[in-house]
Length: 262
Image (tube, rainbow, N blue to C red; front, side, top):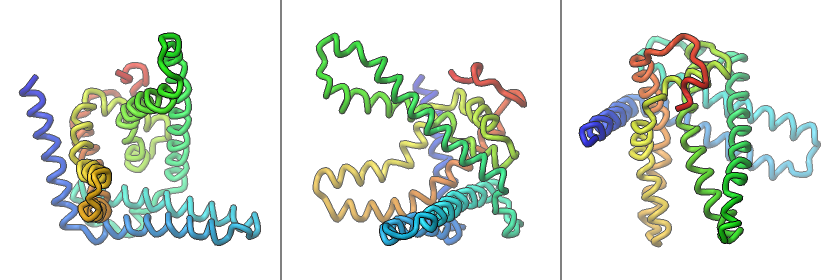
């Protein structure tokens, strides 16, 4: 067991180091796209407040524009990191733009994940209901036990389906086929992915700890590291993991959900 943990830890460290190397060589393009996402998100929030009393049609139109722009930029960033992880540099601008069908499949995937989260939220309440008969305070269940367990379940689900956009962009699969491939590809790799996530998220956890302990300067420095290093490197890490797992994938061309849940 110890050798197994050493092996997957080594693999996780290798992925992160490769991602940092790619980021250092292509920092401007990746960080620039992340900055555009940041600006788009904040500009939409600002206009939502500024146009609070404006015409309803204009607000809906701007909402659609910013939704399309924000998620479109996400897909462009994802394609960019995939090409870099594959060491493919001979691409023109149009190669980075998602097609209309890819964009729609991606949006459907996000909506479907929200539906899954809602269903899990309700199921966890049902499963935790017997605790009330055991004398556990309802407020404790609502504010502590339920959010914790729901968060753990959703983290596991997110790890299993997080690669569905890659299959949409790389293979042109529809949303649900991409979900099935993500389940199949991550089967047996959950622990490795958890270690990778822990490594990548370490500075964010340190930032939260620094804020909690009152070290504002340390928290501010860590927030800058998160914004300008960690967030850009996340996309590269996920692309490298996707490519490595696809090379090792030995499943079928149309995997089923039932066979790959556990």
